[in-house]
Length: 355
Image (cartoon, rainbow, N blue to C red; front, side):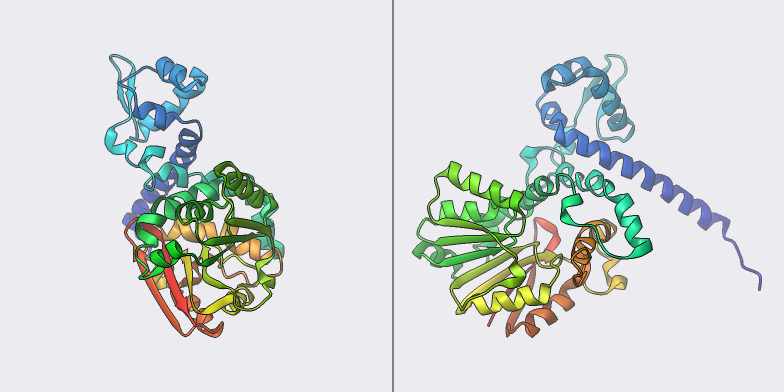
C-alpha cells in the first residue's frame, strides 16, 4: 500500500517545531528574567543600555546582555540599535513582573527549568516504571508557593471567599478551618490574619513547607494557627472542622481516595470542602480545547503523576479532570458537589462539596 506524503503538511509542522524550540528557550530565559528581577527593574526604567540595566539590577553586564539578546529576538523586549538601548513595553510588563500579580506569566515559566532538572529520572521511569520523589525537585516549594500566591493568595479575600455564600461572615464569627497540603502556608496565614476569631490548621508532608509556613506565622504574630507535618492519607478523628480546603493538592497524592474519605470524615455535617484543582475534563479529546493543555500534561507527567507513583500511589496526574474528581468526591461520601471557574485562573477549577 502506497502511503501519500503531504509536503505542505510537513512544512507546516516543521515551522511549528521551530516555534516550539524557540518557545521552550524563551520560557527558560523568561524564568531567568523573573528570578533575577530583570523584568521588574526594566519595567521601572526608561530605554537603557545593557550596562545601565545591569547596574540597576546589581547583575553582571555580560550575562544581562546575552539575556537581552534572547528577549529582543523573541520580541519580548524592544531594541533601538542607534542608541543601543532596550525597553520593556508596558504591555509586556503587565504579564511579566511581580507587580502584575496574579497575571505574572514569568513566575509560571519557572516550571520549565524545574521540570527539566528531573528529565533523566523521568526517562528512566518510562523504561522501568516507578516514579520520581518530591526530594528530586529542586526549588519545588519556592516555585509552588509563587504559583499558589498568584492563583489563590492574590484573590482569596476578594474573589474566592466572597464567591461562597455565607463563608465570609462565618469566618468573621469564628470557625475551625483545615488546609490539606498547605505547602508554605501562604493561603492559611492570610486567612488567619484576616479572620482572627477563626482557628486554622495546616497539614503537609513537606518539612520544608511546614518550616516556611511556621516562620511566616511567627513573623506575622499569628496565634490562631497551627501547622503540622502530617501524611494526609492518614487523617484520623471525627468531624471537627467547618471548612476544609485543598489548593492544588489532591491529584498528586499517593492515595487520593483515602485523603478525600478522611476529609469527608473530618468535616462537620454542615461544613464545606473547597478544592482547587487542575481544569481538565478527564477526556484528552476535549482537553485539546484548553489553551495550555500541553503545559498541564507536561507538568502532570514530569511531576504530579510521577511523585504519586514514586510512593506506589494511584498516579492520577494533574489532568485527572472534573468527571473523575466529581466521581471520587461522590465515592468519598459527598452528596452535593459543584464546579466553577474563576476569571483570573485558566489553570484550575474550584470545587465545593458538602455532605
